[in-house]
Image (cartoon, rainbow, N blue to C red; front, side, top):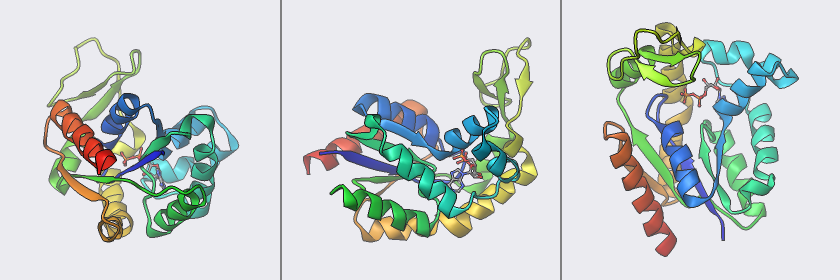
Length: 213
Ligand code: ADP
């Protein structure tokens, strides 16, 4: 038996933080397409060159490229027991491709946690997000202020204009997945305003209930 979780929610809802915690607790792989793309950009690979301007403007990477990437990733040995998918699927075509890939191995999506956060909160969270270039630690100018000596940088796609574009992409392409997973009986909603720890506990409990059911 393997477990496959699909994290859904707008940018800034906390999918990445929660996905990495869940993956660690459950011994599953954390598959984040955003992280994979950013790593390729950092390492100046061919894939990185193809996606750099798309990421910087908050535009989705084409489905075929993204699907192929995830297909390869899910065949790695660390995905044998399953994976927490974070940032994929992001379009109906990606969701259909994932269903097909998993079905080939006799698997399906067990749970799609939907972390809900309204647009205003998304904009506030992302435009205030900063990373300390030396330590890699992430701060928020208002909610988690960095120390005075921190050397801060902003993720290129966290500028106000780009965040709005990412939200538009989310509403247009990703929000339809809510119905898709609801129809399959795996969608479960969580409040993105909860504290990180409380949300982590709620998610873990939900996975536990599914595993028993
Ligand atoms: P967010 O915080 O907006 O959820 P991610 O780190 O998941 O950000 O993704 C950052 C960017 O990477 C997206 O704006 C998009 O350009 C690209 N990307 C990530 N996942 C996908 C995907 N499944 N399909 C297409 N583009 C993607």
